[in-house]
Image (tube, rainbow, N blue to C red; front, side, top):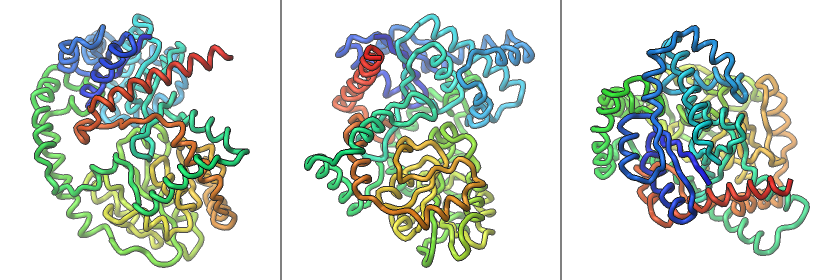
Length: 484
């Protein structure tokens, strides 16, 4: 089995360990794509990958040799899967989306040429990586056209559980199959006990996903170990900036090395100013609905729901659609402390029926007090379901097959949809427990995330479990194809 790893950003530390486990324990052949020249050298020295391909080096040559008009024509004729989404992905890209028009066209055409060549030359059985940038979206799109499976990890809202999705807007197929199997039957005593115990623990302990742990910390909480790790990345950042410049398009490692220091300083100042002038901490009394702002830039928002990235406009649409007498409680995301400029919040503060709350306020409490919960794709939707509240979702949730979930495909439907949800929603504990059991039963075990934020991700047992999950996922697809 040949697997191509997309080693972007912090995955450069995590993926080599997974690749080594796949080679040693499962006999897989593994290659890698990196987005920066220093990263290419570092991975090649490890000796884990059969080949390491450098996107930045390709883009340097491409942008010098090809004119804008030629690149535009190549993109128009390219064999993308769902080409109508390409521009949405470009504008959602945290790096390329900031470039001028001519530079964007040349770089995106170069990315397409790189992936087309890499896929046709390597002919992998699968590509493993996130789809968090236009570079990765192009990789997914061209892989899809060639019948190559693209495995994108997606952490669930439950600790130490994750899924693979096959497309940027894909759902959790294994969970959907598990739910379909139990929809028309009763849970066994063991299944019921497992789901009920999880639900009780979630409510009693007000559980949060591990991915939120970093965001829940104060910006003033300086972790010496983490700062030492960040300092250790400075030489690589400097080398990347000097060697690759703006053709390093996979992470922020191609930006000037001093920018993160300035950004961290401004983040702390904005956090203090927002808490003092913008946010409230008092829980709202009376009829309310709840919308939690999502992290941005972020795959779950910018890639999975690219037409709902203007969250201020979305909150205004919700506020306009609520029944008179209701207030919309909008809470900042814990991971966005100090990230947004103060001007971002001012339109929300001007709306008479909107209350803007601090990220420090517990979302569990807000959901419990609300008559409806709104989310694009975030954890808030899962929490609302577990508290048996009507949830209205705008983006493609992994569990969108759940009957008690309300999907909003067009914001003009919001007034009707809100009335429908508030008047006719009825909790169904049996269905809820079946949904919980389906996730626990079908999700892979393991912790996927930033190894700098949680060093346990690199534990041997976790790495071995993830390698096993990759092989199991690909084997199940082969078996399903053979049956068909």
